[in-house]
Amino acid sequence: MKADPAPLPRILVLASGQGSNLQALIDASRERDFPGQIIAVGCNRPGAFALERAGQANIESFVVDHTRFDSREAFDAQLMAEIRRRDPDVIVLAGFMRILTTDFVRAFRGRMLNVHPSLLPRYTGLNTHQRALDAGDRVHGTSVHFVTEELDGGPVIAQAEVTIEPNDTADTLAEKVQAQEHVLYPVVLRWFCEGRIQLGADGVLFDGAPLRAPLILPAS
Ligand code: GRF
Image 1 (tube, rainbow, N blue to C red):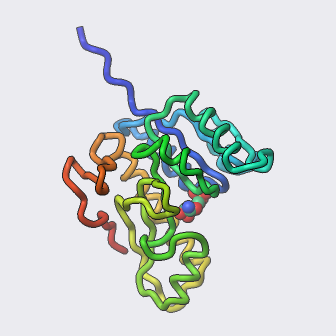
Image 2 (image 1 turned 180 degrees about the vertical axis):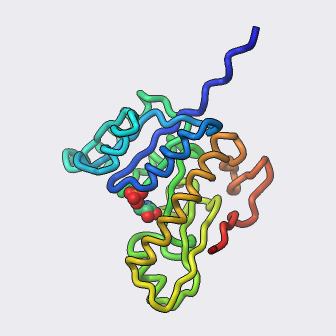
Image 3 (image 1 turned 90 degrees about the vertical axis):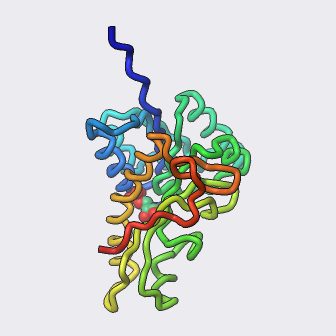
């Protein structure tokens, strides 16, 4: 008799807006050999298109509306309760526009990923595309990293680059960067679900060995 296959890692995605990264993850997770399953999508904005995408894909979704809470702590406590109830193995932040409290981040240490639209450590925070243009950068991109207490400061796993052309604007760059995110994030999530990447005491471990520098998907 064949043994039952091990259950796939449970992925919970948090999003706030358009959810184009969520869509890329949904599409990837539909591939037959994808080593994880998206079990739920959480959102802090009731009307966000990300919720629609979850619905279209028959994935359960929930909303914790941050405007209904007096404090960040109260919001995070409710979000944490909703997440815990669904018992995910990994939390994937995909355009989730809330700063999380230290307690929340610590509770999911090593099990929470984020995508940030810059080549970290450059340009943490907002307006990354305009800041790259203003600095005269030739290369820009996106990073997938483990979430730690430091905003956009957790160990970077992988990056995808984008060449900045003379006629690029913040909008055209945003588009190019997002296209790269849609390739990069599913790849990193796959590695995570396969157990290939972990957060060690001193940074990222890839196949059990310290990752000295982020893996790079070069600009095409
Ligand atoms: C992405 O560009 C991501 O880097 C940033 O927010 C954006 C989300 O876009 N954190 P979407 O909601 O996935 O379309």
